[in-house]
Length: 305
Length: 254
Image (cartoon, rainbow over all chains, first blue to last red; front, side):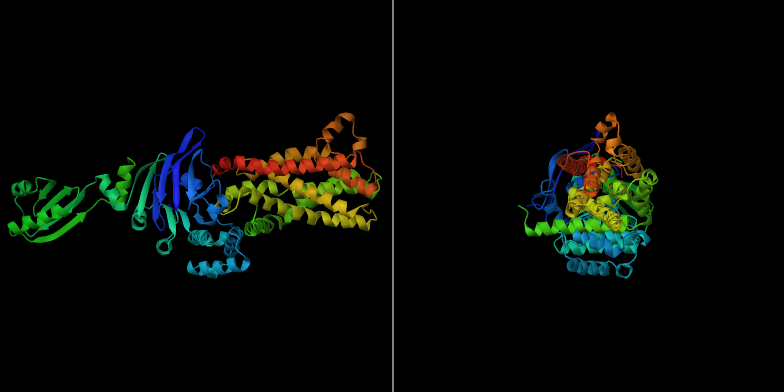
């Protein structure tokens, strides 16, 4: 059984199709990335999966519970950091957490215990009495993460969890996400930080125009994208351009003095050939540098940028 | 059938929303002005100096206080929380929209009862005793719930601008006061105005309370009770249904 399941979701706002046939499954303990440009349908999909919006058609299930037929049961298993949400600015960090704890049905004692633990974990314990409006953006974001975790969810939806955070806070959240995964929590993550998605996610779906256009692991997506790897080699002396052109004729290449640049779709075989080339001509390799496509290039290529 | 665990969850959620509302919206000075001073001045403007017995105007004062306290804050909570982006935070937790709204109604009911109690006590000091205290408590409580729900009904307008809802609620509430036999007794209203008064939710609690204070009333008691119940149920069910219907449009505002 999949932990998160989206089945042919459709949602229109007036004449605009925000989500148009989105389907995917997320396995237990997986971090699933959801990437797309602004207005692609990410937040609408998350709002459907968390039961905030009803789809026009299709089904959303969390651990087998239909989110719209059994919303409370599904949400009891779920924690959410919505992109467009705030803690109550005129409640303290502590009161915000306790409020959410009660909404999960926790007793005062249980909610208080968990609130204290989470505030300590996220370095917010010292500011627990301060109103949320007086906290920095990073602190408010961490408070929202704590509010998502107080119900000890099996499934976590994180919509732009590190957006606007400083480097240290973002790193703290990323580390927490990996710890949660190691504890078996299933995570659906949307982010504009493509490299962050590549670092954290087991699989990624790229959504554009309300439709999923590609799904796979970060490595799969790089291969599927067909983007090029650049291999730059510097030898100890200039090479013969005609000889080099003949030797590396299988790949697009440039020769300039003692440097050769190869442009290819994979890197292993060309590197072996470079070593063979150098050995046969008694050349020493001073420097070799490979630049594979990064996930951001892949993302831009897939969404047609 | 609801089990004990889910009932306890439902109660904790409702009570948590209610306490949040009281902390954020009701424990504020300006609310006291809107809920207490405004109806008091309105009532005073009509009753003082007309040579009436204090007990004759008490039913009106109680109804006005309930009306202006119970329906003063509930209209702004949903648009305000949409604007603050706290509504979506609440909606993503294991609670239904109806639980949130019932929490809002509960907070408003507590607020309405707290502000009505001094007037009832004051009436006892004046020697204007209620002929049946228990009935009065039931009538006041049901009326407070109904007007709280009316406020929530106004807030179903899918906007993130509280002023939009305040404008709508004022446009409905103020005319209602003048056509409901609250400021002018029903017996003194012209025939054409009586048919409008019959369609007003303020008419029936005023008539019921007037009966308890003075022994006189315009409508038979059973009509007053049935109409009060119909309005309360209509406002409550209407508010819950309409909010579910407009939620999607509301969230698009942010």
